[in-house]
Image (cartoon, one colour):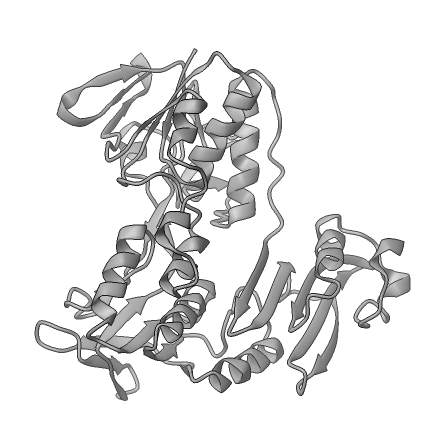
Length: 400
C-alpha cells in the first residue's frame, strides 16, 4: 500500500509516524516544500529569542526517517492532484500513484492588503527561513513594530526584545489576545508586558507602511504615525488550498472534510491547519496532532470520528504564564462567569459555566491548577457545587 503525504509539518509528520506504528509494511512518502526536516513551530520563537540552538530546532534526528522507512522529499512540493487516476504531479511533470493521499500542506502567513506592505523590512513569520531572515535584518534595524497583538505577535515581541530590539506591538482590537482573554485579563497582561519594556498600542488600524524602498514607520487610520526600522505582521494564516481547488475538492475557507477527515474525493484525506471541519478551522497544535493520529488510523481501515478539539493554549509572555481553554468570551446569554484577580501578584483566574458545566477558563500568572482546570474544561465536568472554591490557590482538582 502506497501512502503519499503532502506537507511535512506537524500533521503530515505525526500522521506518518502513526502510520508506521500501526503498519510496518506500508510505503510512506512525504513531499515537503521546505528544505528542512520537521520542526515544531513554537521552536521558531525560542530560536529567535536565542534560547534554542539551531541544531535543537528539529523534532527528530535526520536519520529517524530512514530508520522508520519513511521517504522524505525535501524541497519537492506537489504541483497537482489527479484524483481520478490517484496520482500526484511533482516537478518536471513527473506523476506518482497512491493508494491513499493525505493533504497536510497547512497554511501560509496572511499579509493584509496594507499599502506599502511590499517594502523591504516587512516580514511575516511562518517558516525557519522567515526566522533566519528576520534575525539577519534585525541586526542593523533594531526598532521593530509587531502588527498584531495575538498569540504569535506577543511571542514575536518577546523574542525580539530578548535579542535587544526596541519593540512596540500595535493591535486593531481594544485589548490583547482577543481570542484567548477577556478585557480584564488582557489589561493585567498588558501591564506585565509593558513592565518589561515592550510598548503596546491598542485600537489602531495600520493604514500604510511608510518609506521609499525600506520601511521607516507606520501610519494609522487615525492619522498618527510611528517610526520603525522593520515590521513583522502577525495577522493570522490562510489555508493552502490552491492545488486542492484545482483538483475539484470541496473548498470553503479551507479544504472541507467530514467526520472521518475524508475529502469529497475517494482515498483522499486531509488534516492540520488547512482543513475546515463542521465550518471551523482550528489552526492549533492540539487539533493538528489529534487529526493526524485519527486520519492515519482511518487510512488503514478504521472508522474513527473526529469530534472536534477544545481550544487550549498555554504560553509564557515576558515570564507570565497564560492558559486559555474552551469558551472564555461568551457572547450570548445563559452563561455564568466567575473571576478572581490579584493585580500585585500578576494573577487572574476566570471560569465560564453553562448550567453548572465548566466550558471555559483563563488561568494567568500561576501554574498551580493549570492541568486540573484544563482537564475539567476538556471533560466538560459539572462543577456547580465547587464553583466558588475552584479559583482558590489550594483547590484540590483530584476531587472532580
